Amino acid sequence: MEGSPVTSVRLSSVVPASVVGENKPRLFTPMDLAMKLHYVRAVYFFKGTRDFTVADLKNTMFTLLQSYHHVSGRIRMSDNDPSAPAIPYIRCNDSGMRIVEANVEEFTVEKWLDLDDRSIDHRFLVYDHVLGPDLTFSPLVFIQITQFKCGGLSIGLSWAHVLGDLFSAATFMKTLGQLVSGHGPTKLVYPETPELISHAHNGEAISIEKIESVGQYWLLTNKCKMGRYIFNFRVNQIDRLMAKYTTRDQPFSEVYILYALIWKALLNIRGKTNTNVITICDRKKSSTCWNDDLVISIVEKNDEMIGISELAALIAGEKREENSVIKRMIEEDKGSSDFITYGANLTFVNLDMIDMYEIEIKGGKPDFVNYTIHGVGDKGVVLVYPKQNFARIVSVVMPEEDLAKLKEEVTNMIM
Image (cartoon, rainbow, N blue to C red; front, side, top):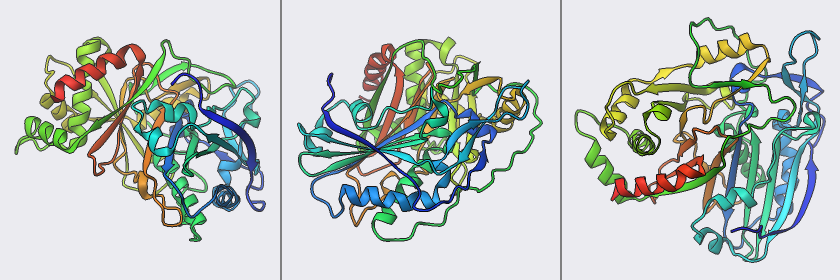
């Protein structure tokens, strides 16, 4: 799909229903700054008629921001020491978030979801928002509500990753659904004041990449054109993979087998020079909504073991957590540079702890949910979705030149 089918785009702002931010500063942790150039993007689809209106959604957001007042803030740069690089933080000034209302008149939701290319979800149904270049005026969150001709709609979220991880973004959307349905929000578990703790650790992290400061425009510049693709692994395909590559002595999880499958495919495409190290993003078992519950690990392949079972064994047994060294690197940098996490190496993200379909609006659950990461480095990112009735979705963001080869490799490997 070349041209945009989206019409009648209207922008407005929503602020907290009453003053809550009180202009207080909210400091970023080192893990927040490791995610500074990344954005969470999601689209929730609802087919046909429903018991809520666009006005219901929009009006509820005033109340939603009462609990998430930091989301209504704006980025500011510290100026305590004019001779040192400025460190960003959020000024909780109740400036609000942006709402985008739009229409798609050519498609029903069902016809849209029948299309093979799922990259169109994020190209057209999520507002293309990044922070900057007018950084102090840039909203941290955009929500796009798109109505289809069938009466169905989509809700597209663009969420600055410095606010929190994918779990945090999904919790934000779940809370919106609770409020629209007339229920009180679940207890807010986003820490009011993140603790800044110094971390002593030798060596350099290889799970993140240090780059020159991007200044006031928080977007990574890629060296090649990036593309998106979704693999749908059916139940019988997953069963065959598990039977082939796991044993009683090596009972690997489905997630690890899928990691190993994609890693193996990209080793075949890129060779070991560019793909010998992978990054794995997990999450602590916690309901806290922030980036500090992310667990960033690396796995290195140092020999000629390239079978899927051997790669899965490496992932299961040789992960090396790098959170402490990441935090130390960023603390010591003191704002001189920027960092990227997703795509610094080939990066795998486990979404098993995120119930994407947990959002419920007046009894209606989404028919399909599509999450991705925007602002990914050239090595790419792979998101493994929670298991649903149709088995597993694996969403990849890769250089376009790799994507066509990856589709062919994966197809051959699961036949």
